Image (cartoon, rainbow, N blue to C red; front, side):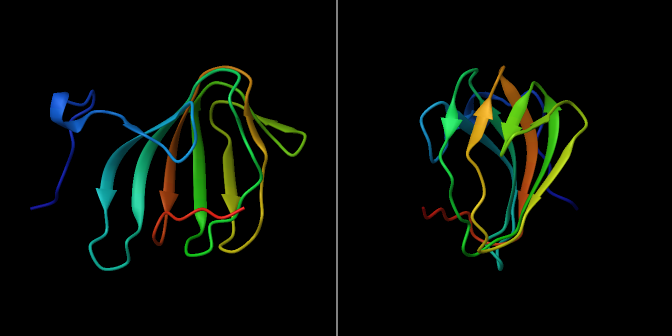
Length: 112
């Protein structure tokens, strides 16, 4: 049987603080062996996440709602963004509240 999570989440499946203020994560799936995670990610309007690197994972982002600016490009609902493992990207700026489906294919670690 496949694991699943109900959306909206129940109280024990609540949004958790992300690695930056104004960013929350809802873990949908965590791969036991690779450490990879699939999350819903919520950015509060006006939040800017500084440039950073994910040294252990590629990041794949599908924007579900809102407007997110990355290096001068505005991503809106339906946009896809890919950041290769070890490559500095950002800053991210949430022009509105943004919710994305984000997949990290390895452990979610962040360095500057």
